Length: 315
Image (cartoon, rainbow, N blue to C red; front, side):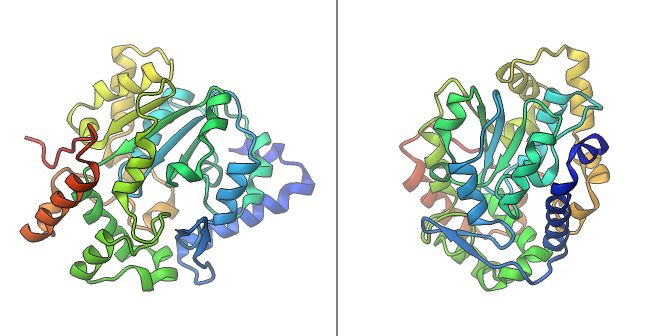
């Protein structure tokens, strides 16, 4: 990271310092960030609608960039760790986190992108498909990896994350600490999840689903990664045109286990309860039978016409 920082000219150092201050305040839960909105989509405080708008309209996408698209708490950090290993090697310089997380903090951060000696660039976004300039990504030869996780585990993981993370103190009005109320708000699309009021995870999936069979788009399931990590690493490598042998696949698997990521993550991430359990089927510890059945009906109603099929437990 020193090479990146030293490459930033003096007249732009203030942008780096401002970005770092904003990031630290965000993770500390400093109560100065507000909900923002773009095209009717409500953004969690700290994630900026103006930044998303800038990325859509003005960001110059470098050739062969990679975008990881996901709804919150579906496995983007794990997928990102694997992709970083594939793109940059075991000891290579990776993305600068505030730049990696596309819609996080102010858009001025993008002025630093040209000084980051990382190629190809790799971004993460929780935005729905209609707020991402997919055509611009296609024209640049970029690739999109869409990450899916079963909605029951996602909802329970999201609840624990929202309940114990400082950034959500800026939006406690939208995230109840009471699970039954949280679940009710969740399925009614009342929370701040970058969606329009009334929309939630299923609508996020449907937006990206229209690109599912395109050559530059790959769908990957969290549960498949848990069931056979090596196989999914190979799938990602093939999609990214990266050659790996069995030894390298095993190295990547070992370097990106849940325990390793939890131990080696940036201190800011420990402040937001990012790594909790990461298991498949943990929803059973919190979700009632009635809630589970309601989720089943909702998913069937909204996604039943697609070939999206979720796995709710590993045998």
